[in-house]
Length: 433
Image 1 (cartoon, rainbow, N blue to C red):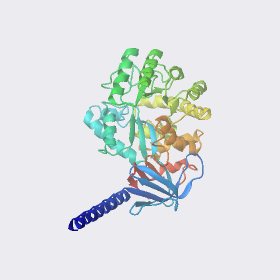
Image 2 (cartoon, helix red, strand yellow):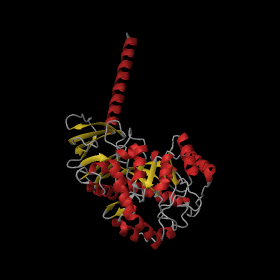
Image 3 (spheres, rainbow, N blue to C red):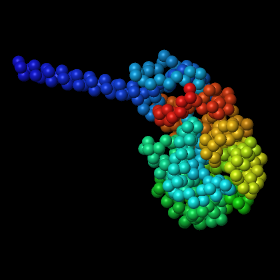
């Protein structure tokens, strides 16, 4: 009889422990759950927005989205009141240099910057980028693989910043755009470029960037000059695609772009002088364009003057402005795939807002609808990265990268000028609601 009592006591004790552990798990789960309530969820497909919505976030993912009353909020979940705000996916910027060094004053100030100092500067810019509502970026050229180290640190939670997809170090040719930077190694001929491509891939780059035409930031030579040979272009693209890595090209040249698109290029940066036949070919091949229109738009002139840019840079920039704008207009007319990118720091103050918000505003002025411009900075950018199953829209199962605005960006893209809330992976980094 006594043995039976002992067994019962053991069962009861085990049951109590199990109930306690279960309650602890449930409490911990609720504590790791956030409900954003009262806001309006913007639908990127052009359907009706969800008013008075609930976005339930569990861990780093969206667990549920729906109208208030249709989503069960667990007891103990943290609630964020977004009443009166409009909720969109975290913004994405596809042409970023967190270690950007501009010609002129900035080059002089940073001429002896160490790799350690570069990494710290990039980390600071990554945090500011995130606070500006940009939760994903593509880095299109960095030095000393500081970009890849920062990417890994952010992924491990050791640093705050956006999700990073990086191209590692740019592949430049002797005498080409970007080739004269201090310490820059250049590559000539298909064999050297193939080895360079594989080196970047081995280091962890998910993209490669080739500079196939002249550029604004290189003193001398034509912006539309086709500088990299067809054989060199083809060699890099072939080598990258064998590893499942995409290739983007700095190009302002119709001739160079046509060669690269025929070779299977995935994306074009800038496109200063692209003509309609080239854009039609890009549309046919599914080649993406990242316009970086803030680089040449007249409204950004004060920014470059404030940065202390040399006269030769300003002359080259201004010479491309009108044709660059026309190329953007034609790209929109032709339905070319466009993802937003700035070639400035995403959070860079420019014309009373950030470079990212201003870039989207310019897309609308060039012919996009506000919804199309918003998509270029969210789901279209995710498509470019082939990451649309994880990021780019507010859907159940995707990462909880969420930004709140004070008005509807599908009616007025200038809503991106006022960021109220920034959440990345379920963690709130900024809350001005």
